[in-house]
Amino acid sequence: MTNITLRQLRYFEALVQHGHFGHAAAASAVSQPALSMQIKELEEDLGVRLFERGARHVRLTRIGEEFAPCVREILRSVDELEDLARASRERLVGRLRIGVIPTIAPYLLPALIPVLSHANAEVDIHVRETQTRRLIQELGEGRLDLAIVALPVSEPSLTEVALFDERFVLIRPARDAGKPVPDAEALREMKLLLLEEGHCFRDQALSFCNLRPPLARDGLDGSSLSTLVQMVGAGIGVTLIPEMAVPVETRSAAVAVDRFADPQPSRTIGMIWRRSSPLSRQFAQIADLVRGVALGACGQGCAAIGETSDP
Image (cartoon, rainbow, N blue to C red; front, side, top):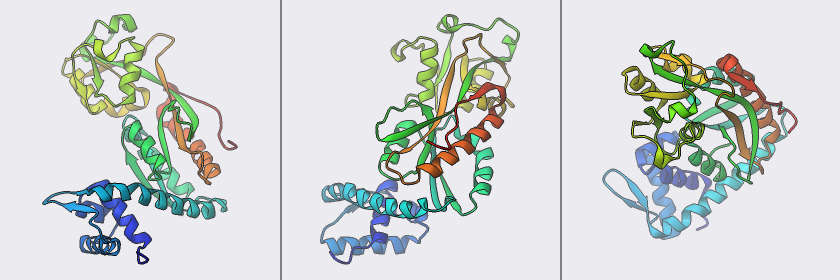
């Protein structure tokens, strides 16, 4: 029991996340035999089997499931100790784990990462793209440092900083260019293509059209905005996308882009992190940087909200 190391616990956590020795080893930047040996030694020190090994995947045993939350809490506490030391410096250093929702990541990250890297030369940036629910969970578990999402998330344990408002635009087949832009009531009678359930942007689009999910017309539930726009180009229906996505998603599709009459539908994009993080001051500085990059990428379709240098 006394031989357990932080390295073993981090490898254990990686294997829990990935469910595969090879994937966990790659994520941990070690060889698969090295990770396997550390897991085996951990099990031997504990005197129990933590994983059931299969041909392609591994899964936790019953005792492994009880062990996992304890490991996660230990690693989060260790990370917070490291963050205390990092917080004493003027500039952020070390690893920075950023989560981003899929309806922002492809359009913001190409512009953001070079600027963020230049402003924080000693930071090792890791990016995770997934849905809001998962990002909130991983923030709470200490697997992420901060996340860029649509607000509000209304989690008492998280700090929310609003960055900018982003308008939604209507995407129609190119043959509809020049026709009157439908209002929310008219959209309810059209085949509205939406992202699959779990995406906050789906809920926002339904809210604008005053549709509840059970009442939404059958169309297409896509996993990405790109799929929806291409289907519109094929004449299947219409869709809504955020302003930032327009240059990327419409450049190779036979579609018309239209803005709604005021008040235009929009969403608020912000940054969230754990209230307990010692790095709140540094994260607020990053929020200001993200706001500036996003406004440059979005243009007139976005409006800044506040400043966050002194949260």
